Amino acid sequence: MGAPIGPVEWVVAQGLAPYEPAVAEMEARVAAIREGRAAERIWLVEHPPLYTAGTSAQDADLVDPGRFPVHRTGRGGQYTYHGPGQRVAYVMLDLKQRGGDIRAYVCDLERWLIHTLAAFNVTGERRDGRVGVWVKRPGGGGAEDKIAALGVRVRRGVTYHGVALNVEPELGHYAGIVPCGITQHGVTSLHALGQLVSMEEVDAQLRASFEAVFGRATVPVEP
Image (cartoon, rainbow, N blue to C red; front, side, top):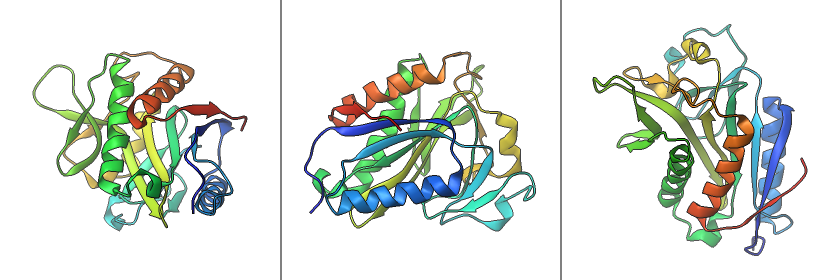
């Protein structure tokens, strides 16, 4: 049996977190949650520049293999970029105590991001057949850009990996991949849309929006 339902630990990492140790720490925490030895956790990190390849990644979508380290990962999805200025939220929740509906969980993650963006006057939207959160490009014309990505895995009822929201990353770094296998649309960030908010402001809104969407209190914990 998993840990009793209670407040979710909210942890903000300091500095840039190396990818492989972060995944190892996340997997250890998932095991502890599954065994009832630890509380659920949201872990906010920034990574150094790197690419990750999900379980559906196509080799042809790695356009520039030598640009940054490439990490194969067990999350769903294709290639994505992580780096400074992007807020990654690793979400470790006991889905068994939330009804066990993975599709509903993914929808809640998208709602969480949309709710957060709305606080900064950015309208995020879902799109059928395209996981993540999208915004209409300023100036009209129907073009859309991705502002947040999702990559989810569930192991024996406990979620891990999570979401990545572009606050102010170097968007040019996406040129080394075909992000999420989609060529018809671009990527953007809060800063590119004129919302010059700090990472601390984004973190505060992510926490408030998480509590609003998931209906669960969070408790700050030192990293």
